[in-house]
Length: 387
Image 1 (cartoon, rainbow, N blue to C red):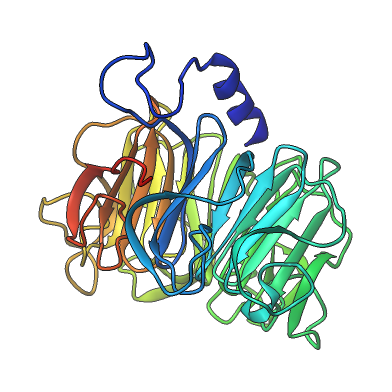
Image 2: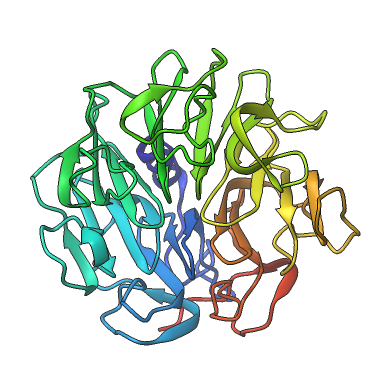
């Protein structure tokens, strides 16, 4: 992510708050976007952080508790970031010098600063560790060093922070048990996973619903376990109690909570998503639906569509309940995305290849950032920055 954003920064001539040629209406360009349970945050092409949605515990980062914003607000402090993550009313972002900053709810030590104190503005995690990447789930965050060493913090009730099960909470970055080296990691509620340099997937945390992908056991593990099947993946994403990976051939395999067939059955080993469409990346996110991008940036989603989170008004079916699709369906609008993120209560957001942010689905807390609290079943562009 740092490399991708650095390339955007080098190529961009955009001046914040203005059109590219300095005339015309104000246009904001984004490079990164991530959604949590009830809020969304994004980075501009200049690396500035903006957030919107529910702000009860300060996850929007502009110094206010118990608030809500249906348009983007600038995160306080003027820091520049290369990537970010959004969780359950908390947010973390990776600074340009490799320091991770977190803000919002500090329940279970999610902010990684060694305390349990909520914070409405960014503050650094403890440990003076230089990180190369960041991932964040509902109540766990993890960072990866340039050498591939994984550190996690937050709730460890299921072992998903990679600490002994006797340690229910990890309030500061702690190296994941097992000493493995990863090229990428992803964490979410109950489960964390990593990819080795060879593309092998390992997961740790709860296995009650098959999220570890180890079909011979349902026991939880704080130590990374090899996912069964011998598949190699080019990318991987975790969701609540589940994980999905994309192979080099473009196939998406998922395992864990309600990941098989009609979304009413758990999958205890990687199960291929039924589609002839090839994908380049997948977003399992914090929601109950999943989305993926093709190599050309076309967005497809599957799962529940109760709030319009699949981005289509076409009739969908195939699940044990309705509205829902157990196969990927194309998001309407024909937009080309560089990144997708799925939110926790039925919404989806993405950044297009021309650096515009779009969101769709549930919007009761302003998490779509479109200037209202009205649900949007189709991509609607994120509103301008609130000064």
